[in-house]
Length: 138
Image 1: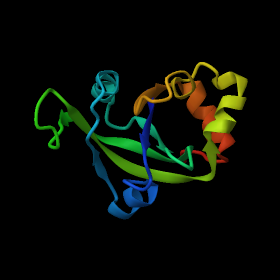
Image 2 (image 1 turned 90 degrees about the vertical axis):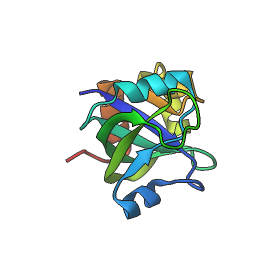
Image 3 (image 1 turned 180 degrees about the vertical axis):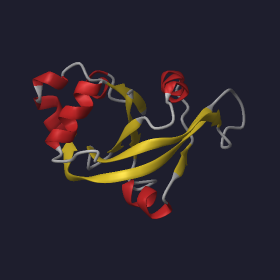
């Protein structure tokens, strides 16, 4: 099953907001590569929820609840959004620093293309980050 990572500034929209709301439309992505990743997401895919800024850490797991649809916040262009639902928080957030220290994650998009807000995660990377965060999807 494909896995993904979505980044958000917790001051704008964080994990706690997603949990409180129960679901969200992931809107506002204005990068062509990130848009292509949103288009590739399928209902049920796992998504790592990553806080940017001072925290810079994976903090939770969510799932794609709604596949690509036109982004209602876009005034022009072919921008899209997906729906996300929370699954569970990480028992221990996994920081970017920890991810960069782990040799098995050296090719992860988060390490190589840090600014990309939506990115693919291999199944091996996903499982390793879950282990680092003392978390499982079950």
